[in-house]
Length: 585
Figure (cartoon, rainbow, N blue to C red):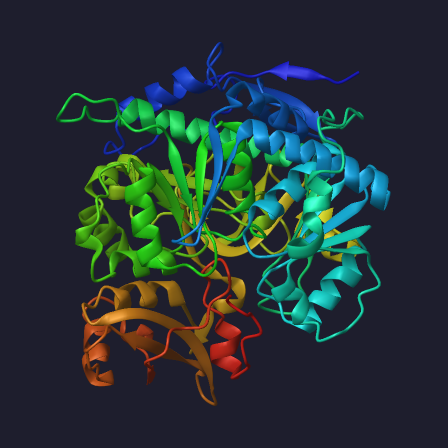
């Protein structure tokens, strides 16, 4: 029998401890108490999961298939709008559910897919990607999101690693294989997917039992170092994540209700712009899944991100929310015609994936006034199902360089190399636990043991401090620069450089030095029409940072920094001179 122990917001050890800083509004604590306390819409309970007691939302779906079934309550409302700026494809929740049921039947009947089998998806963001995903998880099978930016060699590795029953892929990515055979039945989206959608018209969704801790998804780590690993997420992981998203949205709505329109008209219906890839938690978990769970319209750009297309879609579809990375936010805010578009529908914007410099945060508030009060940033990792901490609303304005507070279902601790929890304020590795922690790395027990410590504490690989309330990140362990016995954190220097009015983006790495061990090198991309000198940049950094943090080596380049699909700079490409293997299409 499952053991259940009720826990309220303020009983036992509070997971939002009293904040010693009086600048955090008391009304935030009151709002959270109403949402999370007994009888609240996000009431918490404590249950045993995989041998450990964790906090979960009491009122939660038990499987991803339940979300598809629930979406039929909004059968006639729009779920998906895919547009390349010229042509649109639109699907209601009801149309989507019918397609999902037919494709699920085809996967089962034609390809023999059953519970726990893998179905791999390799494609650009498209409706077929999303329908295949929901069909797979509705069967109790495991949807594998292969990285759409991979080269042919990486694609072959990923397919060989996950051994799917069937691969659903588009022509462009299959062409990268250059005729190489994968040995897996393949549905080419442009040629064979329509047959899946008409395989069983009118069939109901599958009904086989699905457990909360059954595997549902495999997503591959970005692979910036070594071979990518397959992160296994369960139905519980993703369903709890939707609860975190809804909790955050409800809190924002309570604290910053939409202002009435000047003409007395009703505010626009919720509508989310999506610019993240579906093979990443930002596009899949935080957009495709969360929008279906919330019966919210989502607008997707087909093809590469184009700020002109994005701005036109925001205006036309009356987009109210957007989750961004630093890269796409920068490109949209610096579009020369941004002032020509009506962005008044925007209510909530938030980002993550890589640090968002405070200077860019300020620019977003200035350019998108309707979302000024709701700008939020998230910190997390794929192994933690996207969300670990959130920093939003008034707190972000007060603490712009903090990663935020742990979300309600997450325990956070700073640990030393032996796994001992360090006192508040001490620096060490950020570790988290709770129902968002992945099940495992697929077929890699050694890597799983290395990443998940006893008690199911997940090692993030990030260095930081925790003051009992907020997390402050220093850097990734592998990015730390050791200069003459001093720890130098690249992100601190990068933020300073990106505050310079002539700098578009910057990255900081360590270079070998015989005496000091390492010295600091900065790679800087100037804004269009700006000329930057190393001397002037050195002086700029020295105004606010210690002498040993001022770069000794400079590289000014005109091309954009190499990044992966989540916006993270590929520092191994910069430091080792390796070529970026990611194909941005």
